[in-house]
Length: 386
Image (cartoon, rainbow, N blue to C red; front, side, top):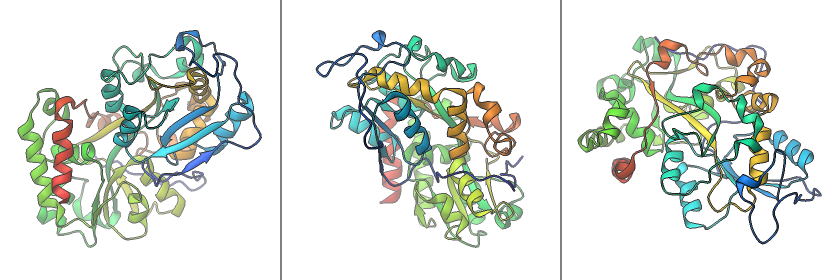
């Protein structure tokens, strides 16, 4: 079954084009003074000491670009008196490098599922104080104890989505159903009238190749099947010559404007680009028949955060029912917040490209924690592009 993005005649997202956009900074509104309700300037408060709503200084929030309604940041500042310094990154690995090196200190970050696993194993995240975040109880139980944080100590779910293929209906009609073959099989790809792009993201591109080859990601990673990883790498190298580019920034817009006819990318990026241009009758986001990636982005507090109470206050703020809905209504990704459902636009809830039906969900997998194979996975994309 092909998952399509349905026509949405009456509603448009405010902004947001992909999980990965050019780095930008949104600085908190001028004139607001930082609160210091707990802790002091010399020593960060312990998470265990934080009370609901308590803040302990300005909040340094490191997130994917275009991934939050700026009005939510303004509302948080007005409600708490805390200035939010909002900076962005283009990959989980970029964020990890900054946190790991201590080159910059962040109070709140938004790692994806597998990166939570990596960071908690390396001691780079603090355990959260859920008593200081009563709204976190709004998170659906399905997101409460995932394999990447089985005791649910280090994260609160932020948004979720899928990774698949965006294409023109001309291509989909030619294929009959969505398949990774349109990228990885030379004979099928040759039928595409225009160009093709892949995400510039090693875990995602290797996962797509593994899916086409018939592997389960969990089996490959958890069993340490390096031969399968290398087989996926060989497939990427063979595919490289027929790609227009690797792109994690403008894949949705590239599809709509005709630069590519087939693009590997994230659900919300495609949905937003299609919605903003009213291209529901010409373009579609699909989950290939071989399966795709399910991912969850989360909120977490780095081990060296300065203002942990302010970070807890922001997590509590964003897991409020209406605020959680505002995230999804802004960026077209799925909400893990059960209490938000009544406030989410019905057109979004009814869109199977954003909320896939059960039979499509059965074909989706998380990218597991790669452990010692992480470098090998990264090498496959690096070598394919060289």
